[in-house]
Length: 197
Length: 197
DNA sequence: GAAATCATACCGACCAGTCGGTATGATTTT
DNA sequence: AAAATCATACCGACTGGTCGGTATGATTTC
Image (cartoon, rainbow over all chains, first blue to last red; front, side, top):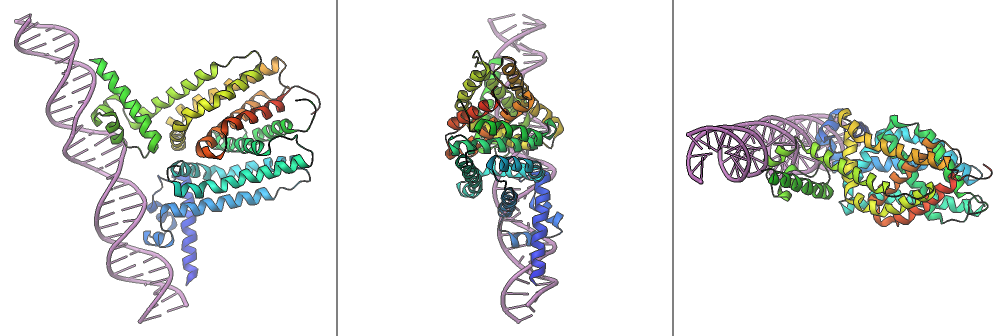
């Protein structure tokens, strides 16, 4: 039956997430993943052509989740929408906490492999455009000064990336949710439509 | 004689930097480093107790370099100093380009080893305080509104970290030096001492 | 009973670190 | 100053173990 097959696949994905989170992409061996899943190596390679392939499935899934939760934020005006998204950060950070390290480790390796790299960087470009569009809307509705939307979006993404990275690398270092809120306030004020230069 | 000894050590450090940059911390084998240095494995372990130990020497060196070049920026007013530092980013990014990936990879691993972790995160906290102090100076001199200096510093560091990371992961994605300048301008405007909220 | 699914045994490559031993050159002895 | 002594620097084969992936055969499903 394909019932069992699907379940095996799901168990492998689950187990892999746990192992990768605990030990990182390289350190987590295929064997340990199989053990965690209560499944054999044969099953593993039946469902996934390689360790890398399984990993990309996890990555894709996570990004989809994030985009989904970002889409949930919908205030009337763009600045409020952005602030609303900022409030989601602790939630994202919670899932990032276990995932980001392994994904970063993976990306760091992927840099050297053109093939994999394209697949990895592409969804990230989507974020860039997503925010650029949002900021353009903000400019159109008069919330923001007429700055370069793309540059502003990149700045925003940089801020987010930096916050996420630090939140993961140094969780004790600060209240990163609060830092995000403050940072966003500064950013918004910097973009605000008003008076002198 | 110690002349040769010092040279061997230097050659190892040089070679290690190259290998780590090319292949990453884990992928670069001690053997390949030795080969690159034209030196034997015995020499390696004579000079450094482990691969990790050598790495930490490289890390320390790089951070010292960066702090040095940041200290070189000294304008009268804080906003100008910060802008000046931003202009240094391409220069830092140049050295970061080959170093950041390996350091990130290393840090990602170090998370799981309390011992190593302290040594790795400490210099980074210094940056945090460095900028917090700078911003406090900016508030004192009346350039900035009286925001929470620590939060603002964290925001600034987040921005910098995000920019560096993206500059390394996606060098083709944008002119990151220019993005940095724009981002800094937004940030400064957001901190500016003036009018309404 | 054929096809899909899974288990076990195994292969080849790799690698951090060790260890017995050698080269080099400084210091002491004669 | 030549010889003996010694410490430091270095060499490279070797170990013990890991891991991604494969080959082959058993079991389950339809």
